[in-house]
Length: 174
Image (tube, rainbow, N blue to C red; front, side, top):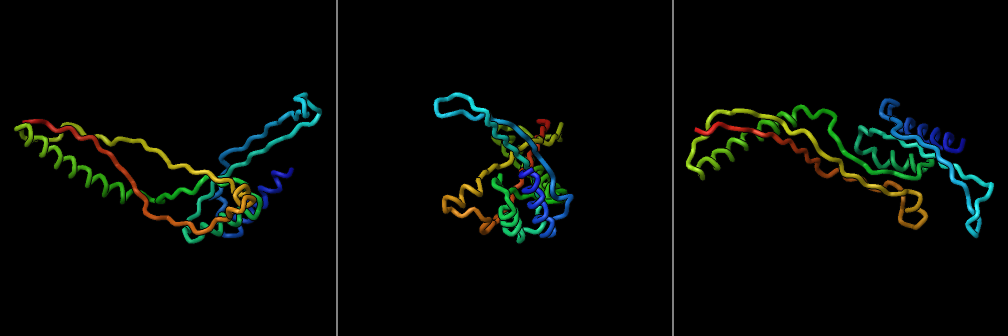
């Protein structure tokens, strides 16, 4: 019941800032129990129940990030598992990256051909290498605040967003 009340407060705080319901998604929910032990290690009749309710929130206005984090923490969120930056539409950037990757592949192939006294022929195959990883960070907002280390959002700086695209190009040798 306490978890439900807290989550309702968090959702109300987020939607109160204009975050659309479609941008708030439950990504994890778990309940587990722990049998308490006495001072000498014997089990007691007391059971502690733990509830974890995790949501992902998409913030579409970067200048709103600090307010969103502060609102969630003030409404009862006690752990924030990082902030990640994404582009909503990557098509144009990916197309540009492919163009540069093809030009780079040709330049490197020409360099290698020159070093080995051959001539670069037509493209035999080309494929895009798919894969990647996300940076992950974790801080416990309540623990930080209790320790006098803040805990509120503070300034959020987006910096630059690097995107990598890898193509594998095979050329014929003439």
